[in-house]
Image 1 (cartoon, rainbow over the protein chains, first blue to last red):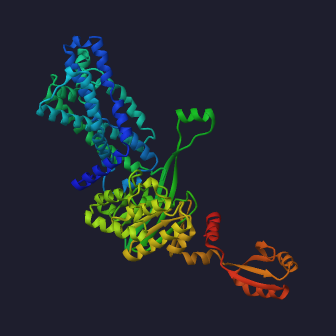
Image 2 (image 1 turned 180 degrees about the horizontal axis):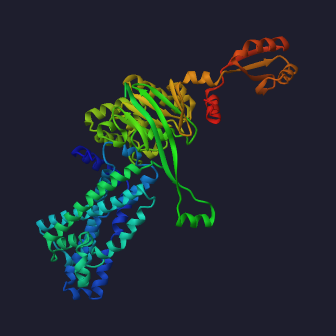
Image 3 (image 1 turned 60 degrees about the vertical axis):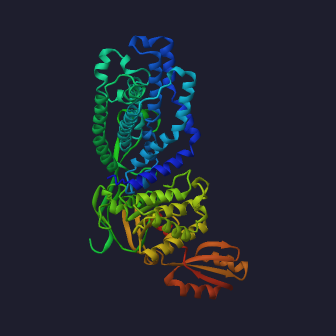
Length: 263
Length: 329
């Protein structure tokens, strides 16, 4: 079904990276538009909200900067692109190639992340200029773990959106289903507040969902805050292994329903 | 399934389509109780295509030609029937099958819009497991054949429609497919570009022995490329055979262009009960049955002063248009 090998992957990445560089200004703007964690940091510190969760201003700053980075490298938009391609029949030529079309979208996302990287660094440098007390260098092992958990976070979101995208084969507006997930993702992922600050009864079930592992878990690792690394990775891998077969099944059923509209 | 590279038996395809009445009432009804109807767009079709054949699919818009091509290349699943393309069930989309075929749709593109076509060619080469050295060779050869060597490095968005179509063709042929499904490949191209594309397809067919299934509204595409045609009308196969035979079968007529010596003769001729197709002062075109040519010409030459006359076959476009309108195959 997938037929992916090293040569295909490298060529896909190279071509998609060249393509993304054509949109560098747009990507810079996207990177800048992802500064919501810095607004939240401002709200938290100006209202001394961090005292309630025993987190110093410096650690909170690092958390939100890490959340910014995690967000930059785990943003997913496959459902919107796929929906357009499916409705206009643009995926038809890709469907009769010996490579699952989702690899194209996957490569587009990775290429976009690589393009975002320098812009994210510049934003971080500006952040450090304004908050010099927050400067820190995470140790290598934590940094690598944070990179892995960010990639897993990206994979979880990519799989969720890909499953929703496959609903395009049944309904014309599958992206509206994705919007249902926007609110829980925004509030429960740790983008607006560290999950540790949530009431106990919320925390008791929130860790069973995939949401805290999207931003909060990788951001905590990167910023050096306390977090259960083993259970965090376990849950990330658990969600990937649950979502992957669902995606495969939805894709397989969906392509049978494909009518090649618009072509 | 014999020696045919494509074999289709009792093929049918239905689509579920929802309809909506106009106005607010219709909108509310559509919202609360959506009614879907199953429409059979392909009805029990049978045919076989031999290796190396170029076959044209003829039919009006919505007749089902494109749906057949989409089923044959594995893009959509048939509702009923048996089919085999190069020994495969197309809708399984197995890798070895996909490496054998290509589909080109005149109104759809696979090239990456903001990059030069060469990038898409290398990407396709990687997807089809073609070594870079071999890919380079094929790109060079095909770009020479298609005369687009200079356009390889210009972003697709800056290419003309003709250059883009040629690039699409190159992208679709880089893996040397044995079966080409072409859906309106010359759509929107100017006369020269259409001619070049036809010339290329002829050479490609001759050099590689590839089988080509083609739909087109430009009859020149069909007449210059296809010896055999399949006429599809409302999902049914109404004719399967040689184009020449079809034209003879449905068009036992000739056009005679008569140039009269005087206006008086032209006027009298036009009022003599002949089937007048065109009249331009002293030039009159009449349509007659092939078997009455001799008697009609004798009659005209005896009665009128004629300066010159020409006997022609009616243009194929007109004949085919007639088939599509009158379904008289």
